[in-house]
Length: 180
Image 1 (tube, rainbow, N blue to C red):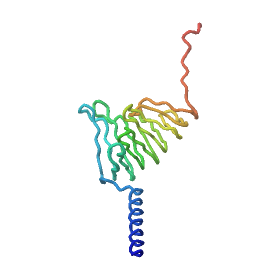
Image 2 (image 1 turned 90 degrees about the horizontal axis):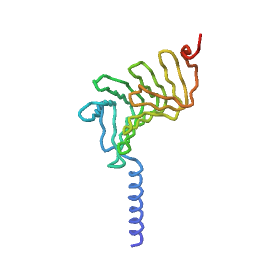
Image 3 (image 1 turned 90 degrees about the vertical axis):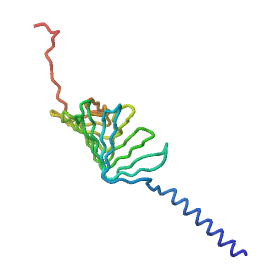
Image 4 (image 1 turned 45 degrees about the vertical axis):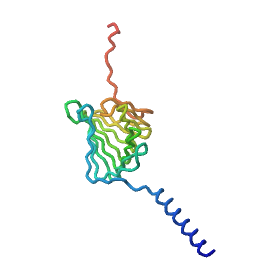
């Protein structure tokens, strides 16, 4: 009798251990290959996200989507022209927080040809802003500007770099108040 009880207890402990291991290792609730995710507001397409692999995890408040094999995001203007593109080797979309994080060789290019390079970028969908607290490099037609952190609108047409470094060309305008 004691022996049977000992085996039963051992099995119960094994079941608990297996259940705890299953909880630790999250399994996706859905997996998609070559996925296209289109975001629109009031029937106007704003964003097109494509990924070779998208895995969805969690439920309700904890829901998120991981793109472990890279992501490409197209941001459209009101005429459906591509205003900017974002590419990265990894991304995670935290649905309930309205945040998407891009990591590992993040590149954003706007329609003016300005290029942002960083290793980590956060896109807040509710405010339509992108930002980073890490090293950033922005290349324009005339200059390369580097810094520690930046923020911009989501289509990267207006941006600001924090802790700026680098050589910046400044156009000197004649002083209109100076008398000749």
